[in-house]
Image (cartoon, rainbow, N blue to C red; front, side, top):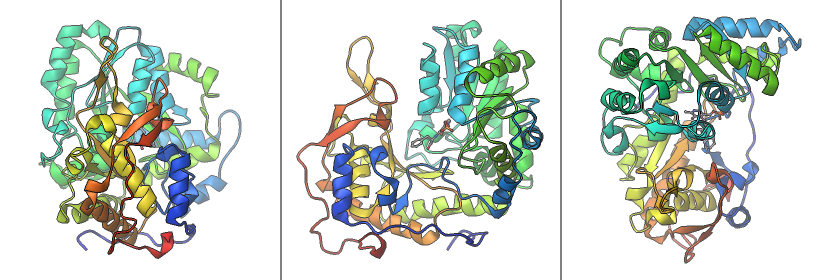
Length: 476
Ligand code: P70
């Protein structure tokens, strides 16, 4: 084992139900081949998301008991604000029930029709919240960030030259904010370097435009900086995080990731006038400013989670466990995005399934097979999530990357679970020519992947009768 063993022991366990292949076959058919519609208790290893799926520590659970549920002025709010200020450095802290509400409040307040928001790559909810204001979400990641084979340390970087061109072309008056997503989820969980943050800040300053972080996975990003960026090896991760945020004007945060909680988020910023406008909106849609859609106990759990996530033993294990899964797949020849990101392994479905055209959702085809054959839930980050019709020509537009994400919940699965996942993916890889394309039978106008229904084109029974396939007692 080339990474540290779990720096925790298990005090409470959640038993997993045994489910037969036949039941899964039926469940996924009923779900219209949409993995979001499958009951979670029919899944053995659930890698749908690392969001809101963390195991909280005994310290966080103890914090829940100290929840002060006063409508206004809960003591947990003050602990929460103090913690966010200490790590992020922004004076105005606004709690929200999760990340997308932070995005919604920010963009509703700042954007008007026709505005443009640059980002390294917008994640789905961020893009949808920009577009809901009839503004344009511009992805300006460095070119190598879109090349799954380029094994480089900071593929999440935003290209400062592309940003400069965008600002010159659209004018700073149409760009109210520049965003930087750390780590860059849609590009494979790749980190952004501090040098890049500084370079982006410089361009923003030249045009007088503020810089905000989408900070969901800030601790994992800071860990990568410590591992990979010259000059940061001897710095504490918390100091790296503080330095990174010092170059920004604020952040949106989904605490469901690096807050190590099951629900929660926040906005934090320097600008008092924006904070006031957003707070007024918060009262309308979330709640009083000292709870913002959360219980007092949730605020306490976030405050404690934000400290724990910066523990370097935890981060070494966390990022190491994800990398270990990636290594097992690489050794077997499975094409994945390299290097492995902080929270997930991304399988390159375009290269794994070249016989399925992007118009037939190769990524989703793999997702369906992983559930049906092995009880594993992954998520497609490709043509189903990001494909759309060109508003002018009506032609299908597909994203450059067609990925299947195996997102690893924090502190939830053991290394043996990772081996089971690796064995399963490798089996499917060895039988990949049996996978078939899919077609859509229903799609919603926005964020279609959550509710879409699909059908298999020329259904083939993958692996069912193949000798030597992985059997796992827990799923048979
Ligand atoms: C994920 C989840 C959420 C997210 C994010 C970034 C960079 C904002 C948000 C919104 C979403 C998801 C995707 C597929 C399946 C399940 C869930 N990302 N910015 O897993 O935060 O969810 O709290 O509103 O990654 O990557 P929130």
